[in-house]
Length: 477
Image (cartoon, rainbow, N blue to C red; front, side, top):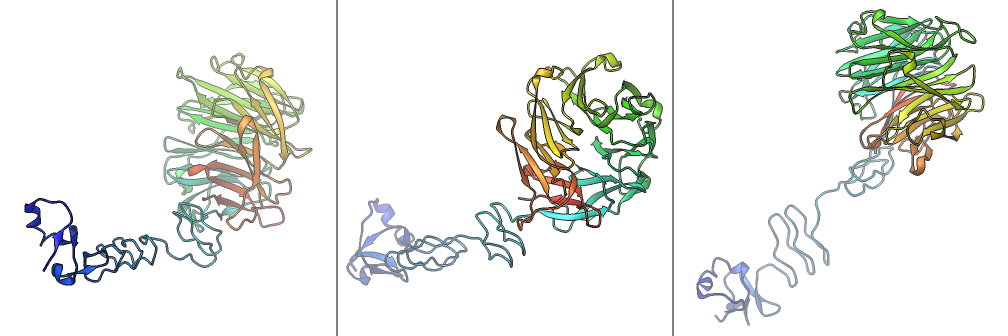
C-alpha cells in the first residue's frame, strides 16, 4: 500500500488519520493505496466509496449527489445535475389559485394570485338586516370589529365573535340597545375608551346615549338609553367623541328658533354620563340651521383638550369650522370661520401634522370636496384650501396608523365603493374597492377604520335594488 498525505499536518495528526479519514486528502495510484471504505478516484485522490466524480459527500438526511450537483441539505431530496441543494418548502397551490410567490401560502379556491406573505384575503360578510338609507358605524375593540346601526324599529349592535379575518366570520345576533327612527340619514356613533363602549344616536326628537362595559352582545348589558337633550325631529346632525374623562356631543336642537326651526348645540359630560341628562352640560349654541356636523377632541401638550367642530350651515350654505382650547365652558371661548361651498355632512379628521381636514359632499352636484388647513391657526380663513375631488355618495374619513388620511365613499348610484388615499402635496388618489377576483364591491354609505398594514375594515349598506343589509368588508393583503 502506497498512500501519502497531501495536506500539511504534524505527525501526531497523521497518527489520527484512521478516525478522520473523511476530513483529509490523500494521493493514490490504485485502490490499494487508500484506506478501507475509500478508493482511488479521478484526480489521483482517495474518495469515499459510492461518491461520483465532481460530487461532494452527502449530508445527514440527503441522498447522494449526482455529477455537477452540490450537496443536498438535511431533509432534502437529491439535487439534479448542475443544480444546487434543494430547498424546503412550497406545496402545490389549490384549485382556483395561481402559483404562490415567495413567502406566500397556497392560494385558496376562487382567489387571485397570492402576494408575498400570504394569499389574497378580502372578504365580505353580512352583519345583520337593515333598511334603505341606513348608515352604520364600525370600530375595533379587543381585537374584534363591532358595528352599530339604526332602523325604523331599533338601534342595533353586533360584534364579530370568531373567524373575524376569514371568509366566514361569526357575527353576534343584533342586540337591540334602544329605539329606532324613521329618518335614517343620521349616522349613529360608536366609541370605545378604557374598555367601555358608548353609543349615541337619534330617535325622532331625542338624542340617545347608552354605555356597556362587558358582554355587549346582550341587550341587558347596555345602560338604559338616556335622552341627553331635546332635538329636532328631522335632519341628520349628530357628532360624538370621547377622550380621557370627557365626552362631547353635537346635535340639532329646537330649543331656540333658527331660520327654519333649529340650531346647533354642543354639550359635554365629564363622568357618570349614562345616569342623568343633567350631567350633559350645554356649552355652545349657534342660531344656525345645521345639516350635518362632526366633533373631535384632541389632547394638548399642556394636558388640556382642543375641542373642534365642523358644521354645515344650511341657511347660509357654508361649512362653519370652530375650535376652543381654553375657556370652553363659555361660548366666547370658541372661534369660528366660514368655509365657502355647499357641501354637507362633514367628516372631520386630522392629518399626520395634527391639522384638520374636512370631507363633505354637495348633495346637488354629488361632488366630494376636501377642505384642508395648511398651517395654524386654523381659525384663520387664509390658511385653508379646498379641492373638488370626484363624484360620490356619502363620505366618511379616517386615519392610517402613520397619521395619513383616507376617505371611503361610493359612486352616486351605489354601484361600487371607493377608497381615497392621501398622497404627496395633500392630493388624494381614489380607486374602487375590489375583491380578490378583481370585481368591484357595490354598496353605499360606508364607514371604515384602518387595520393592520393599512388594510380597511368597512361597514356599508347593500346597494339600491337589493335586500338591504349591513355588510362588513375585511380587506386582506
